[in-house]
Image (cartoon, rainbow, N blue to C red):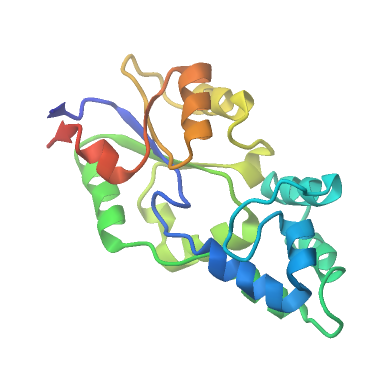
Length: 212
């Protein structure tokens, strides 16, 4: 193992910092719209596993929300079209928010430790206004990071090369490798191929390679 000498360390949010409960979210939507519509609209079954036969329209809806091309109100209105009669907007919001679990304090403590040691730490996340605003308000992310790169603000999303290139252009210059921690392999692969970042799948995966 070696000391952490990378000046810039970038974290994914969901699955790396905050735990996700995708199956809980899908089960909540199954209650609101039934499993066939849930598969059609969200592209997952009740266990949170991806479904291959997803309509182009539903994929575009999710993609547009993730990229900030549509508002939360528009997203909710589109979802309501597939829900049982009488379903409320708040019920849709509650089902969507059910995806978020907890953010263990030790993970933010690790981020703080890196900053205290002089590293620059950033967040690069595919997300949406509803989830990010709640997480930020709950855990005060602005107190822990030097900056955010968010798909719904940048109108780009991982694993597109363009989002990694845009982040590179915005980061302070460094002659050392940039570290990127993301739980999804296709995102790590894209980061390695497009901008030559050093990648890890989790905080423990990163920590086991370093001391100090």
